[in-house]
Image (tube, rainbow, N blue to C red; front, side, top):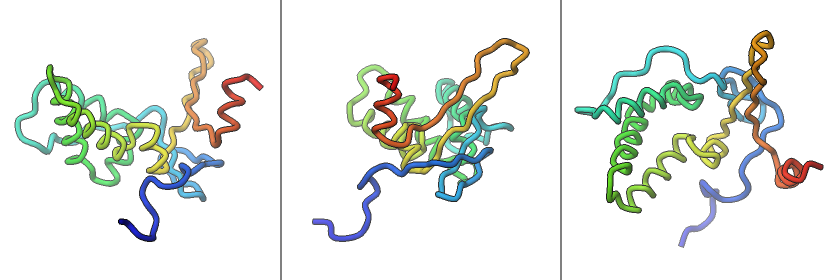
Length: 155
């Protein structure tokens, strides 16, 4: 039986009250990722013999906001391992075990809401060009349960 010390998933998810921009850490230790995603060329594929599907997933993932942190943390191999696992999970008759692994790795890479919270990452906002008439989109985290309930009920 485990004793003492913090656990990775114990207690409430951390909250953020102040946001910064362009993958900078705030005073509370949260990092705001750019909503427009990562700029620049994608890293070279670190594993052997990628399939077309793996390269498609690889390219798409390296354009995501999370990719800013993966690049800083040098997680090329981990992202490639996730891509390979995901491509395998998409095949007919893949097992629930594979899907469980996909979910676990996705969370560790910050590809889920729980993973974003655990990594203390949030995504900034995109302000659309006002001349184009496009709506403004914003991605934000709601800090606590009461605020979420108010957002749903419209109070």
